[in-house]
Image (cartoon, rainbow, N blue to C red; front, top):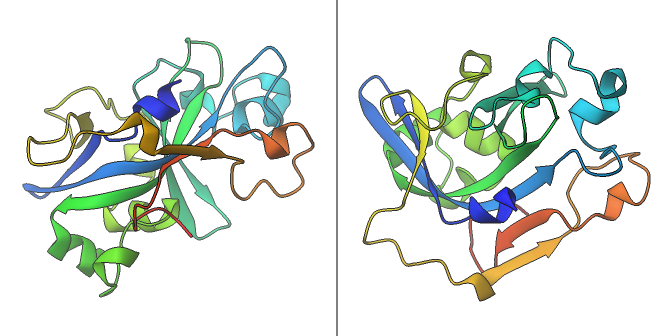
Length: 193
């Protein structure tokens, strides 16, 4: 599953010639399955058909799906499924690697442990907003992309990956409320609270 495979990857964001980056330490999957995932925007809204907001989520894969929530926060997702089907992975938390000074400024002086330990926080730290909706995440010459971590970052141990229910499901009915589609690195201090 792509949500697990993204753990340990490095997300890079280029702003004004500066590179901000972090290692993905927590994700959540939202996907089209045999039965529609009622926690997924693409399945919940408009009876599984794209809307203006969710169109990017229906493909092609490898692009950013960025949306605004609660009238306050941007959320950054990776489109992952076959074109025409709503699939995305929410990036929930990063372990900062480069550009900490800019992230701290973007997060109004927060401590390093509070910069990217939640999806809204990491979007703010990396200045992710609607302008990145649809961005190609596979193009290293763009403004945001995924890369393999540098050699000084420890290799991900598969035994370190934990799984559990997604967060913030609100009134989502079962079984989707309890689906164990949240993945995180055990003991990592940057995982969301």
